Amino acid sequence: PAAVAILREMTKIPSPYQPDAFTLLRQIKPGGESGADVVAECINDGDKHAKNKQWPEAIADYTKAVEAGKKALEARKGDVKPEQINQLRNAIAACLYNVAHEAFGKGKLDKSKEALGQIMKEYKDTQTAQMAATLMLTIALNEYAEAPEGTPDGKKDKETLEQEKKEKE
Image 1 (cartoon, rainbow, N blue to C red):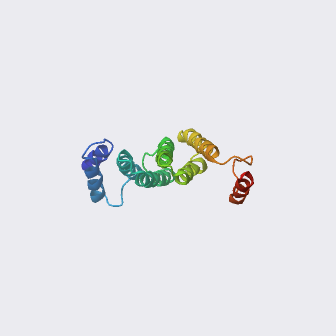
Image 2: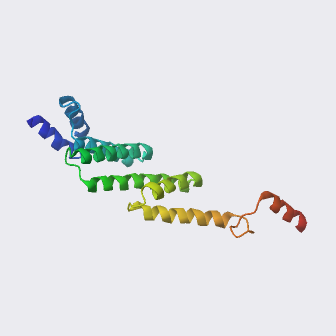
């Protein structure tokens, strides 16, 4: 029991030994980890991936942490708090925002809009949602500015553009 308590404390402190503490804890108590232990391990993995800008992996880790945290809350197992779940949801939204921002910078607007749409749909109550809405508006304005003049939405079909070109000649 003392070893388990020490290992649990080690898992809470970011250090080079933290992953080993998680591994040892799993070996000592296979299947007996508390919900908080699972959440902490997933957060640790997610933080590592986020630090290395591996957004999809970080999203997957944080999502696992949310799922484990919700199960722990429902079962009243471990010391997971609702605030942790909210923080994790914001971390997921932040990773999605980073995916969108990087895609926007590379001109991949569809990929950017997809990630932003996911934030607005699934994580609209997070702190990141406002930034996501701002980037979505920026993309919409850029698309409008780049569209040919004409209809109220700024777009004309190819046939209309060709016909106008012939009329000018």
